[in-house]
Amino acid sequence: MARIAKILDSAPADDMTLSGVRVQELRDEQYTQWIQGDITLENAKVMLLKEGVDEKLIKTIRSGYANFLRETRYEDPLPRLRRV
Image 1 (cartoon, one colour):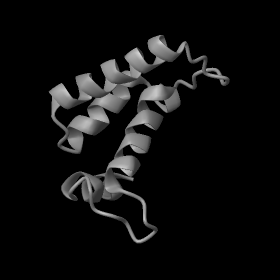
Image 2 (cartoon, helix red, strand yellow):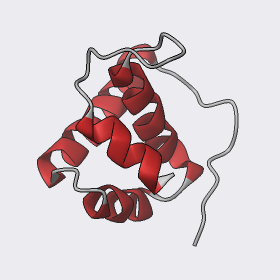
Image 3 (cartoon, rainbow, N blue to C red):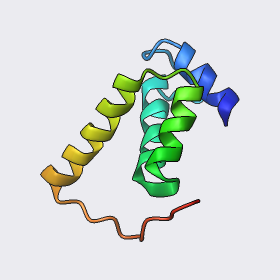
């Protein structure tokens, strides 16, 4: 997972993967999975910092996701999973 994250973070956002998916879409999906509660937010932050992601970007991603939930009134159908 860490190796994939490094590759995604170093590639230009508009680059296409071999399967034809934009790199930015893969990044968004990966970060969203972390932020949605597949792991705790604090663990996600630590993981992203270790991967070299700027702390400001982490806050932006988290606040953007929170805004999305508020604006769409999205209810997660599954309970949040927490790993300790």
